[in-house]
Length: 114
Image (cartoon, rainbow, N blue to C red; front, side, top):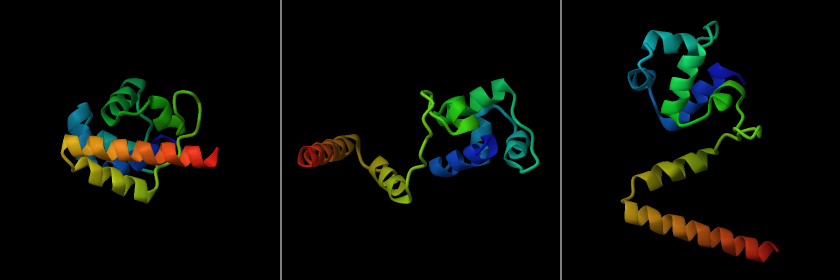
């Protein structure tokens, strides 16, 4: 996948509209729409950096679908995205409890598999 597909995927994952991305980056909605168009142009390095910063991902990820260490970024499952969205709605203290519980479950799983 290339920039267009990765940007679409990340916008969808984050539930972000193009107009919101435009407002946060200072890049016009028309220009971002152009990046997302099948016949659209690629962004300049400066624009790609702005977009990556706002989305909280690396430019490498947007361009190549790769993390900074060169590993392919696996898209999160629908269940994972749903779980994250639900947990984000909780108060901070409850999020800490959920995180602690998940960490305990993972530790328990590791102990049983070794």
